[in-house]
Length: 228
Ligand SMILES: C[C@@]1(CC(=O)O)c2cc3[nH]c(cc4nc(cc5[nH]c(cc(n2)[C@H]1CCC(=O)O)[C@@](C)(CC(=O)O)[C@@H]5CCC(=O)O)C(CC(=O)O)=C4CCC(=O)O)c(CCC(=O)O)c3CC(=O)O
Ligand SMILES: NC(=O)C1=CN([C@@H]2O[C@H](COP(=O)(O)OP(=O)(O)OC[C@H]3O[C@@H](n4cnc5c(N)ncnc54)[C@H](O)[C@@H]3O)[C@@H](O)[C@H]2O)C=CC1
Image 1 (cartoon, rainbow, N blue to C red):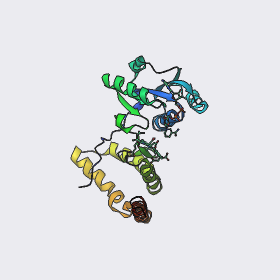
Image 2 (image 1 turned 180 degrees about the horizontal axis):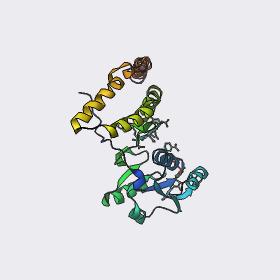
Image 3 (image 1 turned 90 degrees about the vertical axis):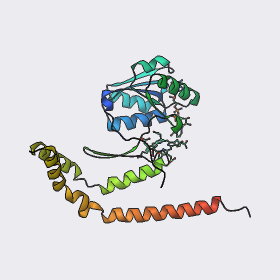
Image 4 (image 1 turned 45 degrees about the horizontal axis):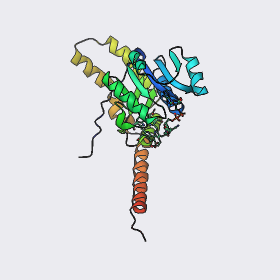
């Protein structure tokens, strides 16, 4: 059996939590952007010796972001529910991880999967629909490509469908089993009908598999070729 991805997927109500982000450079800005893209009202305290001008601009636009201009201190964890470490100091990252673990806080450490309690994912958004993609850290680039593929192939109308379903769901009478049956009937076409696998999806699958096999073969022959 192929190796499985043991990560547990969940969707956090981050706007109800307090985030501590350590590091205000490029990687800090990337993490902040990922957080705000999904959960724009999140309270984020960012502790760093310095902040990129772009990060300061983002902070100025979000009233729940607080910038603290100094080095990280263990007491910064006091108010945190969840922690992102994104500095250029691996020794500091290990200290943050140890201190956070002692307090049972979850930590994401940039560039260090071994120190992470959770990973960020590639995210597809169509209105209320959100798809998160994980490759278990094997290839963020492939996650990004799958995101682009889904962004293109998932119909724009999905958001409208979701809104209509919410109305239908509210109006349905009967017990739970009867409701599930009705909802399944209404949406049958989405999963089994024409939309199930569009020609674009089929083509993507064929090309992607072909391209990767070719790349893999090339790499294998180059990397493992015996010296001449
Ligand atoms: C484990 C994880 C931990 C975490 O960061 O949470 C992690 C780790 C690392 N990323 C590295 C590199 C790159 N990361 C990206 C991009 C993304 N990385 C993201 C997540 C994750 N990255 C988590 C696993 C996700 C999964 O399971 O797939 C995404 C999905 C989400 C986000 O970050 O918001 C976002 C895509 C967003 C999108 O566009 O959809 C690109 C591509 C690019 O930027 O174009 C590259 C360069 C190419 C490459 O390496 O593939 C390196 C090596 C650094 C080095 O070599 O120095 C490490 C460390 C290591 O692997 O050791
Ligand atoms: N920039 C990128 O896209 C990539 C960066 N990396 C690596 O990720 C790490 C971070 O990269 P960048 O964000 O670009 O670096 P950066 O130098 O722009 O930012 C690092 C930030 O950490 C802060 N910092 C350092 N020590 C601190 C401490 N004790 N307390 C609080 N804040 C502290 C600094 O003030 C700075 O704002 C580096 O190790 C880099 O090699 C890896 C891949 C890509």
